[in-house]
Image (cartoon, rainbow, N blue to C red; front, top):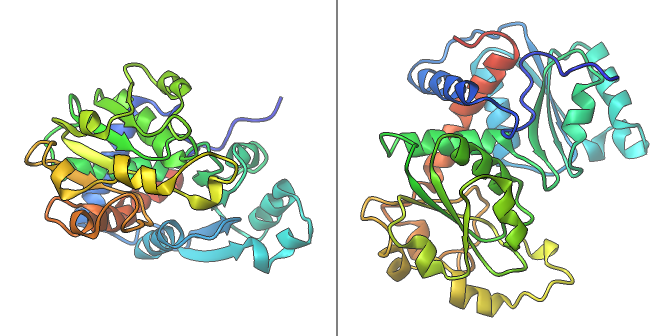
Length: 304
């Protein structure tokens, strides 16, 4: 039997207890007010098997703002490309002094596998179509900056739920805190089985129904590279599911528009919506640093 992951690891939202969700959110709020170099002389490895801008840079900034040193390891610039296994790479990084590993990997379950073979905390920065826990947490933090409470909020998640690890983590988190979540999109991108991800999920094929009365509208990128072989007409998608200013008016007047990025203007949403006063897309990026500071502090036993 493989050992349990090291204390402080963040591998997913599904297995995270509600008290831990709120503890991390509280830590992130404190980090936004005042960040101290509490991780001096700590070493964090950023192991990225997939290209990333927002996630990698925000983890790097977060670590450095806390005083830690970082090493970025890209699959195309290391022995990984020569065939070294994930576990051997983990052993090597740990032997070189890494005290925490942040990993993004195209295969679902890779962070969990690594976490059971190394003795340092592992943080999942996105694994395949499985989860992206820190993104869900920073989205919750963003919501709390605009709403008094998460419980009871009506959230519409629109777009490619099937391929989205962000959607999975967000669904688990929002369900844990008592929000009411509606999923919306074509059958190919929002299969009926998606309703089984958490209790109380609702699915609709009509964007107007999903948005009406919503406190927040979360849009997901339609990843063209993942639509090969699927009968998705992008022109029809735009007609039926693109967020426009007129459709946004169906939501509550103080509803916020969210998107984990990168956004595709003219596909998931219009430029008018992306730049409107209700859009908190830039806030999400900004809040990512504070949230990842909280995650790293927890991983290295310095959260307070």
